[in-house]
Image 1: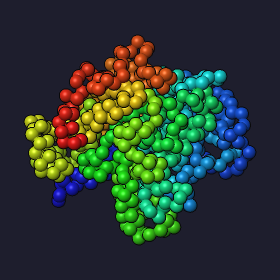
Image 2 (image 1 turned 135 degrees about the vertical axis):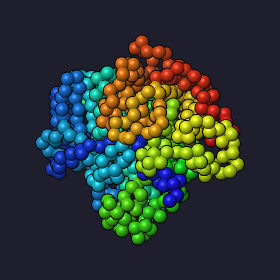
Image 3 (image 1 turned 120 degrees about the vertical axis):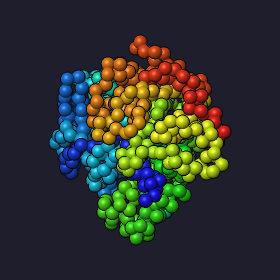
Image 4 (image 1 turned 180 degrees about the vertical axis):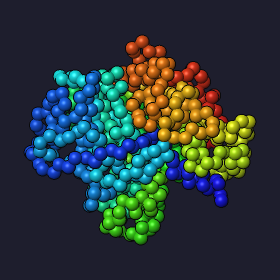
Length: 538
């Protein structure tokens, strides 16, 4: 058995673990409502404690001490039948009061590394709203969260936003968007003028942002003060909206977590996975998937079952945004040319990003990385000439799992993030951070790996959200860090500046000044050997 090939497949299967931190738990299907009651966007919207009148109809949510939740609100029509691989259409208005006390189903996906539930439900374009308890006559900042998951797993309902809403006095919106082959299939047969293939998931996110623009006031929010934020694939989505012309004006601040805008190929994906890819690369992938299904036209593809499509696309893995439709330029190109939305940005990573992915290898294969694996994997990715330099810079002196994680953390995340900070800061106020709590609790549903997980990819999520993936209680010191981060994030959402509230001062990025969250200030570029990686062209 080729263990390296097995490990590579295991990483493809499980890359969404850290990219999303997504675990679903038997979420209920949305209520059905297909009658029209004549509600229009011009109607007056208002709210009582548990009932809100939106532009499409009335919803009743859940009221708790200090906060309210409204779950499973449709923001677009179900993308089924002829709407599979089409731009999102408006949700149909409903009569009466719609139950908004339960989340809707996740978009189609396979089971994931840490217990992510599979889904075969295409009727999934719903969002969730969490507000403070009393929002009457308020105009609170709105925070719009895009979940990660490698663009092929995850859901908005995983991320309980009570602490953000209560602690920061903000409105928080989370959403589902089409994933994998359903959200990001690029194929020449799908380019019919109105609908550009490859970016339906991004178009869903734009439709949800327009829903926020039209409905924020109903929940006590300010449609003119929206902060777009996301982690991993959600961070890359945020980068994409910075570069997307149709997203301009729909948000006023952005927070990018572990999804640097300039990231390119990452092991084991030389052409990219959760990164924005050239149209030609995406269409080759789409044509290969269609051929696997025996299809050469759209009608054939739309006639295939969800399970057939998931199987033919390897669970939707490796699909993601492509240039040429929603994105005239990739985020990296947009930042390099200055052609992106000029709004304040927070951008950062975790200190030990890639340990999550090496843990995934171990969990799926039962194989612990060896010294031979370490050397071979680097040679496979970089080729013999560059690999020799990498191995000289990163000699194996300890645990091979930690060593492999360090190479990919530095090259694919940390130094890429530093390059993103430098480009952003030329045009907009930029606040750079590194989440550095080395004792962050490991995900509850995942087998603990054989090595320390440190500040792993997605570890910061439990400091911002009530996330069922992370059930280990935070220590007193970690709760203080959580409060500090929530303060930074929500003050930034309010003013475009995270400072205040007695928290340590956070300077705008000046070339190398990265704010530590949960650790001591260090020389970021030196710690992650960014000069070396620049010498290799990364």
